[in-house]
Amino acid sequence: MTGNVSRPQQPKGAGNGRRLERSGEDFDIIIGFLGFWAVVLLAVTVWMEVTAQPALGWALGLLATLAAIFGMVRLRRRLPARK
Image (cartoon, rainbow, N blue to C red; front, side, top):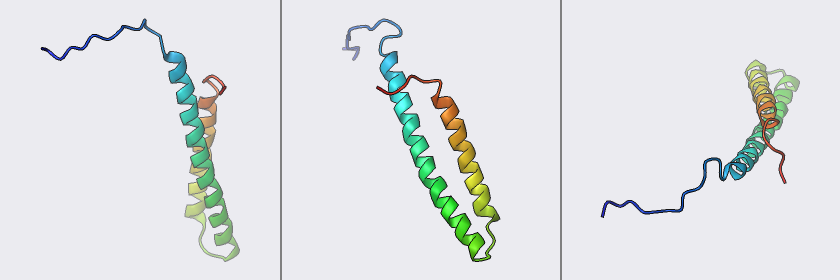
């Protein structure tokens, strides 16, 4: 045998709705993950500022995380809403 297993063929585009829904859920998970780290970086940045330690690196990390969240939210809007 050649190993070619016959499976029922799905028409093109079948299952795309589930793929888009799953993709939206993946975006939600990533946004939540980035949001958690944004809160952590905010707390560290504030602590470093209050204790008069250099906080520029932490603040730049926070800025990058917030920019990533903004970009992910903009991309997420293009996908269908969760059910």
